[in-house]
Length: 247
Ligand code: FPP
Image 1 (cartoon, rainbow, N blue to C red):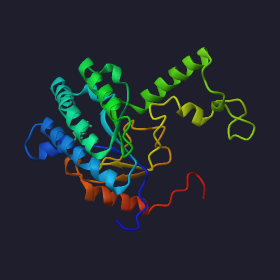
Image 2: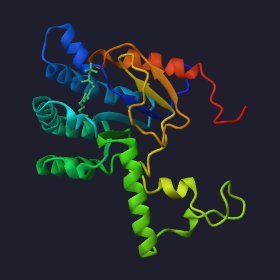
Image 3: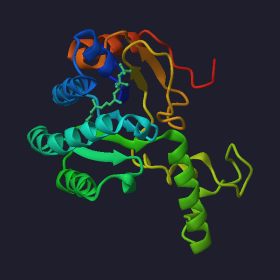
Image 4: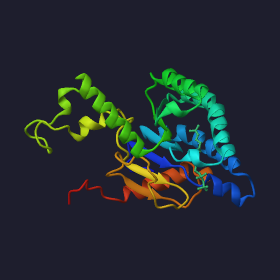
């Protein structure tokens, strides 16, 4: 890893828990359990590598369509891991943040989410962002609603509107001005998006924020993903040249 340029912000689509379990003749929920262990082990490693923001896609706005048993098992896993995450975050100086619409979760889970954020808010190491009941389009929809409300209430800051030298017409809302209403307002866009288990889709993950991200796909199923796999993804990222629309 020496001489590697470490991306500041990394986002992961943790895919393949079900397949991991199926390959072993185990129920899908067992794969999710192993997936939780994989993320728990990865958090301190990501911090040690020098990553500042690690965002994971834990539960999408579409995942409610899974069987009642599977959704229930994922909720129970979150309940169980909330306390472990709190302990690990305190030990590793990790700040936890949730993106997504938490209002749809059972009230005890909403309480856990609020508690995780409040208890870790002062930590200064890795920011671990959990996307839960998250969908990129839904996030943009909610941001538009927040912006409309702020506009009505007259609370949109004047820096949100373009000056004479901006890339959008003077007086119009800028991209940065709008992004301040997204769930990720204080989280840098991902430099690198990793997707496990070989699927070539963004699946409604960070659709605004990933506009210029490098995407690395690995065939590894999520429960088998670890620090060495992360380093391999960073090496592939380092081999790319990022142009942000330039030449
Ligand atoms: C994708 O595998 C995985 C999920 C939908 C859930 C991922 C969630 C976790 C690992 C838990 C995270 C928990 C915390 C506390 C942050 P899949 O079921 O779609 O796999 P498949 O494509 O092989 O069926």
